[in-house]
Image 1: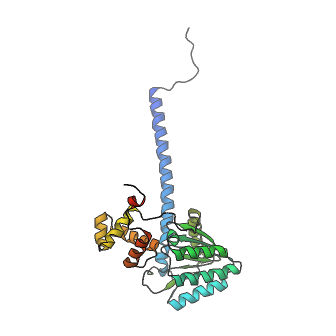
Image 2: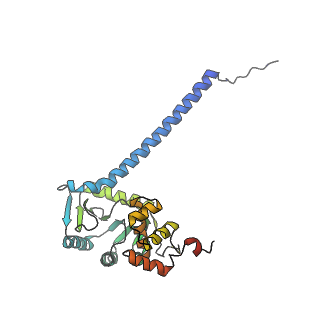
Image 3: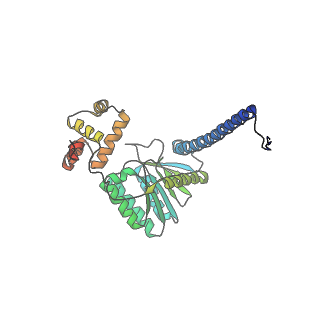
Length: 284
């Protein structure tokens, strides 16, 4: 005797339609996620691009100050007037020792008045003795420090109502200059950018890197430098772009605390970096 089931078994067309609808829902969900992701990326690009357009906002709470004396006076005035919190981001290689000393003096004065300081530095600060010394002294004075591999631009905000950023034309050899931003909406955006970078950064460790020697590629570059190859020739020899080659050389100079090829070669020789990496490790 056959017992009829109350459960409805979908027919073949119904099952196919169900699979099609399920695939469509999945595609729509993935598309929505991608749209959200693109929206976030566009917002980040827009935020990162803002300093490049600040020079067009004169008269809207934005003013450019140029000249070493003007910049120094701005920073000194900020040291006196700030009351609550200083936020700052510092991408790129560590500045020269006199600039670090001057900045640390201002920071210690501000911290001594009970003002909070949170700062994010590039990883390159840990690769040179003066950078590590600066971070160690700042942390000892009470500053909170984090390290990041990438930062969008240099930034200082004071009490969430004033921001300093470099002008679009700033670069190596350019006249010292600062863009002073008092526009509340822009300052708020800069603070939000800092907070995003702060969450992505990691707590600082001021001990020198544990690696005892160069990478295989850095060794290649050092040996070719020793043989008199120019940067362009070295880039062709090891198969990298000119931009990558400049980055490798910059990182080598930072790690060796060198200012040029000669001092880098001397420092590398003193550290035993001109021994092939495999031989140094005792490998055949």
